[in-house]
Image (tube, rainbow, N blue to C red; front, top):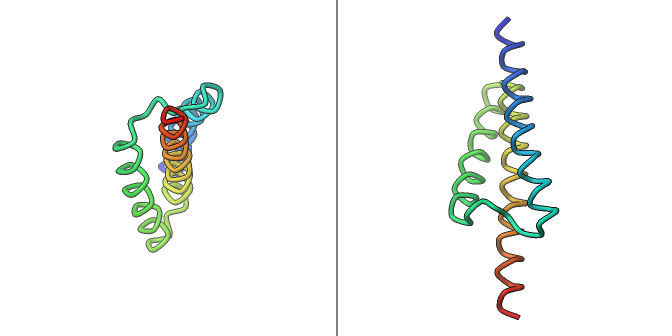
Length: 86
């Protein structure tokens, strides 16, 4: 039962981040502040590594995907700042 709860939580969190990512792509910029995205990417990357070490596949997938989304948001933050300078 615990695995099912973990998988449902994984799907819900990834759905939320997917919506944010789609909005960022459509807007051409992230709605998430750069400082938050950097901290989130670092934290979720370390949690993904930890999940790999302990063999927890649900949290590995969740944190790897969260890291990827945060990195994409960082790219959009930096790209939007570069556009403003021009």
